Image (cartoon, rainbow, N blue to C red):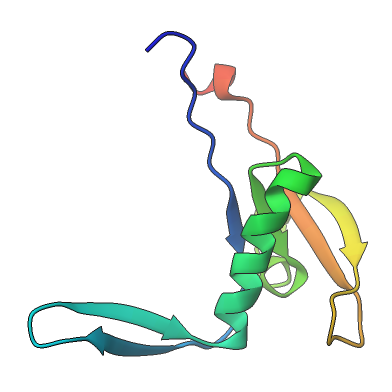
Length: 100
């Protein structure tokens, strides 16, 4: 497949989640329920808008070591619907040509 390229977007957030089994006698899937899981999903959806493959919430960024924070770049401050305080968004820029 010439010129085929896979692009992934990931949203990383920190918080609690509840795991539950959903399904039937023949098939069971794990599902994770939490406003924090929904936040990670929202961040993943925003990767396209911000043009970066990885978005990290401020709540996760605060738990990074100083060295890891040094790799991060702040992208924006956003105010999400239903929230009172803005949330900082970060990313880590990776140059894929340097990985080889």
